[in-house]
Every structure is written in C-alpha cells, then in structure tokens.
Image 1 (cartoon, rainbow, N blue to C red):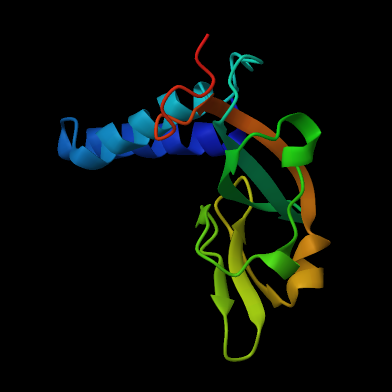
Image 2 (spheres, rainbow, N blue to C red):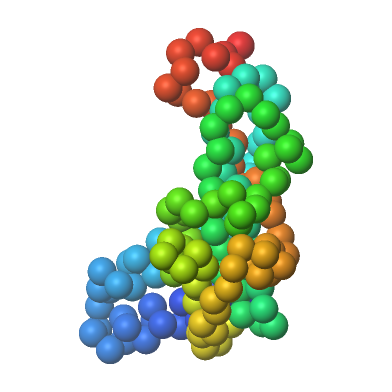
Length: 153
C-alpha cells in the first residue's frame, strides 16, 4: 500500500473511531481507496475504432506529486495518445492538484502533495509545467458510445 493510500485508510479509521461509526467521509475515503486499486487498465481492445482514452499525467517536484486526467476522443491509439503539452492546454482538466490556468497573466498554478500530506504550491509558465511531467499513462480505453456502429465487431 502506498503512503497516500495508507494515510487515507488511517484517516478513515480515525474518523470512524472518533464518531464511533462509519461516516460519509470514511465511506468516501474507502471508496477512493477501492477505486485507486483498480486504476490500472485491464484490457486495451484493438477492435475499438472510435474510442475514448483516459490519460493520467503525473507532475512531480522532489517528493511532491500531482495528477492530471485528460480524455481524448478519436481513432488514434497507443503512444500517439501520450502527447501532452501545457502550451496547448488551458482548458479545464480533471486533477487532484488544484491545477489552474491564469489567463490574464498566462501562467499555471497547482498544489502538489507528498506522501505525508504536506503541500507544495507551484506556479509557472507552460514550459515549467512541461518540465515537471514525469509520467504519462493510458489508464482507460473504451468505445465511444456516441458514435453508433463504430468499433463494434
């Protein structure tokens, strides 16, 4: 179990002990843990023609980490999907690091976390954030149900 998962489980247990019962917060913490265990993609279906890739991008400085999740629609596959550049991104992306684009001054800001829950506030231009990318991974690939007949065998 990673330090982050261990910390979440400890916090859930502490909350449960404090209140003497499961609370909504402990349920949410345990749900997060169960989802993160299944985060790895189990199958990459080559028969899907028009799909939706979910890409997880990891940013890191020292031991502080944050993740960005991007969904890409279309017919491309494999390593062509692993092309992320902050120069081309200023729209909302799902993330766990409070990533924001400040349009008026053209910079990004985020808050990275270490395994102990300590935070590191960062800010910079697109090239600074590109230099923080340490990992890109396809974590999900599924048929685009909005395109009838595509990719069905």
